[in-house]
Amino acid sequence: MNIPSITVVAGLSGAGKTTWIRQQIRDIKSLEKVIYFSPGTGNVIIDQTCIKTEFPGINCFGDGQEIEFIYQIPEANHVYIELGSYLELSTVSQILDNLNYRAVAILPPHYQNSEYHTWTEETINGAPAEIVKVEKIWRVCTTGQVIDENSLEEFWYEITHGAYGKVIRAKGIFDVNDGRSLYCDFVAGVPQTEFLELDLPRYLEGRPQRFSGLEVAGKNLDEPALKATLSACCLSDSLISQYQQQVKQILLEEQPV
Image (cartoon, rainbow, N blue to C red; front, side, top):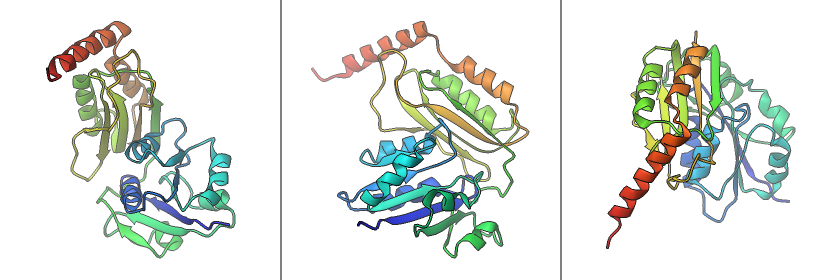
């Protein structure tokens, strides 16, 4: 029976758990089978989508797929489980039962004497995220929606500058009007990054049939206002069609003769 290497990664929100896992996967030989499981995210599968996009051969699992995940473990060479900061560390014991695993905590520098330090002896310095307790997580799946990119930039600025409450962490994947899929990432206390285009083909035929969604974590979040503003950024069928025709025409004109 194959005995896979199982690594469970936990830590504060925004410290860099997914980033660390992606770095580990890049070092794995291409013929080795890797599976990834991130419980507690519901249908807003942002991290799973980013990993699956970068590493198409990986099997990614989320909520509702626990049985399939367990069945896949004996067939894998490497298993990564990412525990969000909102989950109890004991969750992993419920998932893996008696299987042995390597526990890794990704934590902001100078963060000491926490439950993570008791849970593992292997701590890794991550991003200098603010050490603030997350009181609320607001998630929404936007699959099928297309967002005007300029409106998205304004919305993201508002999210990251306190317009909807104290935001500690925000991340999202959005299909924008030129057919690209963009990843947006914010961590309080860490320098902001530009939107990242995912390595996916432009979607230029109607409403996108691939995942998009948003997760915002913080304190005193104004959820109705978040929902209303996000809705206002989404385009109608007619505008989607208009933008897609324009982009297809531009791409056609750019093709070499």
